[in-house]
Length: 183
Image (cartoon, rainbow, N blue to C red; front, side, top):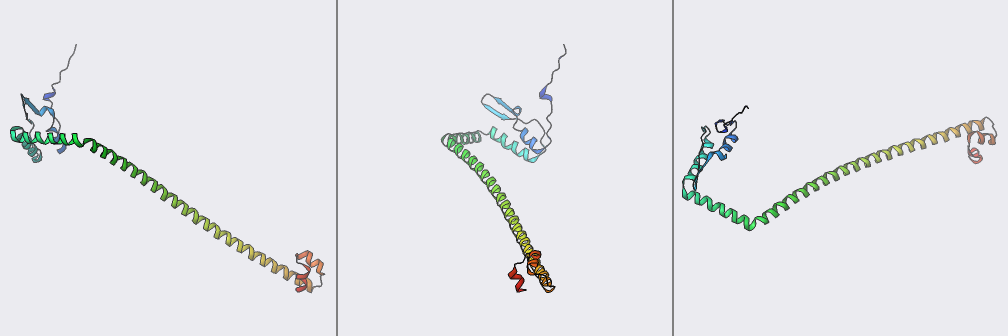
């Protein structure tokens, strides 16, 4: 049968960005462990001064026993602090997340309240406009009624001058006999 073999060690990595180059330093393939010592070996060519500086620091730390001891002590203390206060940090982080979530809910509620206030103001404005339109219509009706009354009176006066009996004038105009007499 046909078989294909790929030697992954011979595949050259594609490092396009500075971040890719920096992260490639920490790939497991670049660490060599012999007995108790682990050293950093970076076989690719380095053309970025920042990456080269990181490599120099790592090689120095790997080669200098005092620096390794200092790094080990720092890791120990970080682990000890986490052991003593880790639960409290986790609780604080959880509370911070809950507070942030509550703040988001409050902001959403405030936004909805502002929207409701805006809608209420709009409704109040429309109600005021309707009230003004209703008042204007009422005033127009009153003015029309006054004009109608005035026309009735003028018509009744003309009929009275022409000698029409008051009963007939009252029937035609809707005015009372007392109103006709006052004309």
